Every structure is written in structure tokens, then in C-alpha cells.
Length: 133
Image 1: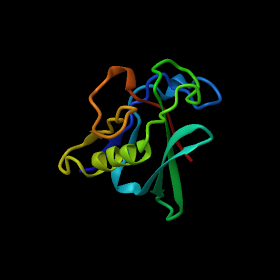
Image 2: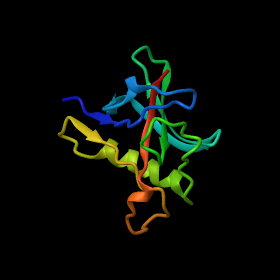
Image 3: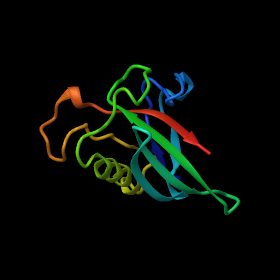
């Protein structure tokens, strides 16, 4: 049975404009993921998943994060807590390896705070864009 990784987008925005078509669940076949990297690129927290394409070429899936649920540019509400890159990568890897007999595992974006910090709803993080290409 195929296992899918879900990136739920809220207030879709790719930095160039609102993308409401990306709102909601965005599924990626777990077995197609070769590697995961997370970095702040052009003032945006970006997760890049390298994929194994059916043609043996590689492709990428790019996911942007923001601390604002509205359809605003991710540059204006950045995920900038110390060590956030490592926290987001760990969350994605947990979703990939979770529930091996299940069908869908949703990535829960960690809050925009140092690892282990007490939960604060003001630090909630949202996935803003999901692009494959």
C-alpha cells in the first residue's frame, strides 16, 4: 500500500502572489523522496525534497513556511527561530518514517521557537506553498 506525506497549506502564497489552489492537503508519495534539506533562502524558510522521478531523472518538491495564516508573502512572517531548519527537517523525516502500514502521514510544522520551548500559539507555523518541478 502506498504511503503519502501530506503538507497542509494554509493561506497559499509563493512569495510572488497568492496561490489559493495550493490551500488544503498536498500529497507526496513517500517512496519517491530521496533526501530532505531545509534552509532559509531569499528570506524564506524553504524545505526542498529531492524526488526520484519515474523516468530516473530527479525532481524536487519545494515547500515554503510562514508564521502568518493569511495569504501574505512568506518574507513578511518568517520562521526565524534559532535552529528552526533542523526542527523542520526532523518533522518532515518523522512524517516520512511514521505509520509504515498507514496511507497518509501529515507533516506538523514545529512552532517558530527554540527546540523544547513551551507551546505558544503566537509561534504557530503554516505551510504556504507546495511546488513540484
